[in-house]
Image 1 (spheres, rainbow, N blue to C red):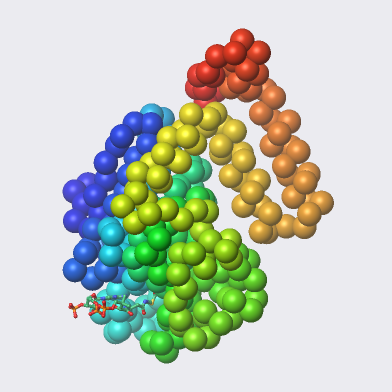
Image 2 (image 1 turned 45 degrees about the vertical axis):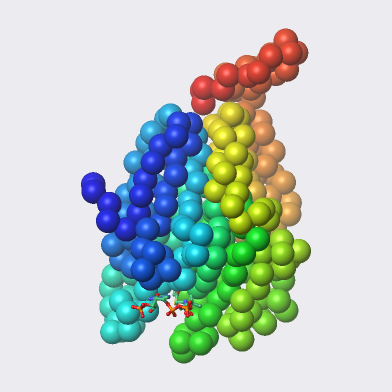
Length: 258
Ligand code: DAK
């Protein structure tokens, strides 16, 4: 598939998906949604790819859903087509780790997309917000839920009810991003994190990701039990043997995902 709104590149063991509609601050339109989903499907099947970096450009990760495309949509259109649902489902349930490399505007559906990723590296000039209230709607891609779980009720309410943006530093203080770095290094830093992640066992990464995400869905006891079962499962993998042998033999492990 030829892509018109994203650029996909592989730097094995990582792959980079760059959102590429600079004329509209990378606003997410249907074409972009289909292309991101297609790229993620291909990368999920590619055993050489261990971790994905999702990024935009210096001025914007994404300013959210394309308002020009949404203005004439009715409730019935959204119900019938699901609209962005394939994107939220794909990223929210993705089996490999996704590192978001953020810079500039991260707004609305753009922030919802970022919050569905696993590690968020932000440039110091990043501005994050859920401005949907300014155009007469509310977040619809998980913003009211994921933002609230990340920053707590009162900051989430302030951001969602006023539509105001916060800075990268504030997002870091609130636990909404993983780290903040100088403006010229956010992509390199995200790639570094992705490479570090790629050196681990793909099986352990998958089960660790599943377990952390469960923390938002179920009770503590159920979560502890889920974690324990994933832990037990890994003891039947070759990667567990390799990891522990490599430690004792004072060498780097070579994980195969088996
Ligand atoms: N959509 C379309 N075009 C956009 C855009 C957007 N979200 N954001 C910016 N642009 C376009 C502008 O229209 C303008 O285009 P031209 O006029 O040059 O053709 C160009 O990008 C530059 O924008 P500005 O002239 O406004 O630039 P400024 O530097 O003055 O301001 C800004 C930058 C990012 C602060 C501003 O553009 C802005 O406020 N943009 C809108 C942000 C926003 O409201 N985002 C939320 C959109 S609603 C769903 C789930 C979720 C969603 C949808 C469905 N389902 C479950 C079905 C998500 C909804 C949203 O994200």
